[in-house]
Image 1 (cartoon, rainbow, N blue to C red):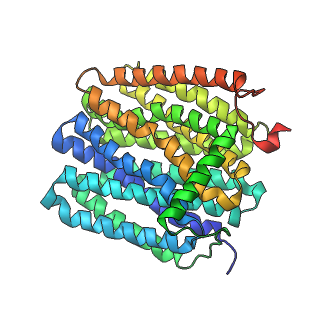
Image 2 (cartoon, rainbow, N blue to C red):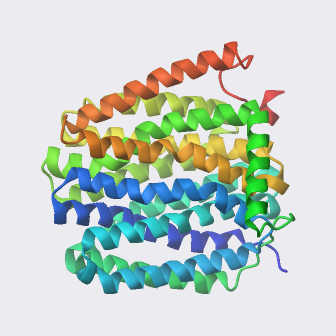
Length: 407
């Protein structure tokens, strides 16, 4: 097998991320416009995220010991087929049912793709390159968030959601063709195929998880961050279209501005890590996420909301870099995929919970009050966690330190 070509790999990742952004822009917009209901739009968000959350630990076990090139290739071909099927069915079964089902399927593919990317990094990239590689992956994802909404607006204005589905299918097919020429080394570990093996694998992952205080702490902190992030993701289309009474272009502009802010931050992260610790970047990101949540709930106009949404998105990504580096550094490569599966499930639980809160509360209070409630809950839980870390876990510092920085 030839050497791993990161640049070719990132092309396929970029095409997939671009398609993800097309769908993230078009699906809630199409559902909101067709139903006129914030509650149904948020319910679709919840249905999309529940399979993603529940499948994470299973995905980690299923991928253990597999050929990751075949996994990536199969995922792209399957997503192409799912999008083509949705294109054919959307005018028959209706927008809400078709698109909600499609996004639930796509979320399962996202989990497999996410765990696979995290799992191949230690097998294909030198340890000293982890920060640069993770940052580049995040940067490509954020560039897709700049281009995705802008391109999706043009496609949607001419061909509505049908055009989005067809073009996304074509891009996944192109990504699959690129993967055929790529060499990817897979981590050496025993495969897991039987149900009892999957259960045993997940039990071992949970045992490892709860024996390592740092991982518990990271999971809890990520869960808290995702409360705000989940609510804002689920509610923002309705805030733009119904609260500020703007058109779909304003939603696309907000997403592009947020992505531009994220790209700038990810461009700076490798340089900042030369002067400051990754741990400090994680701490700063948490503070800014909490502050953004507060002021999003108080924003009085569209431009303030866009600026705060951009801050939240950028520093959620900054926090993610810290989390990914911690995982890659402290979890043994041989069990990385199965542990990431369990950690991913725990981390993401609060996102559909946030979407469900929006669905249940949107008819009872204002949209921005829901954001303020999410901030209040996250803030209180953060304070509790900081004290638990100092008093019960015995940490000398509030955040677990990246091992090479702790000395």
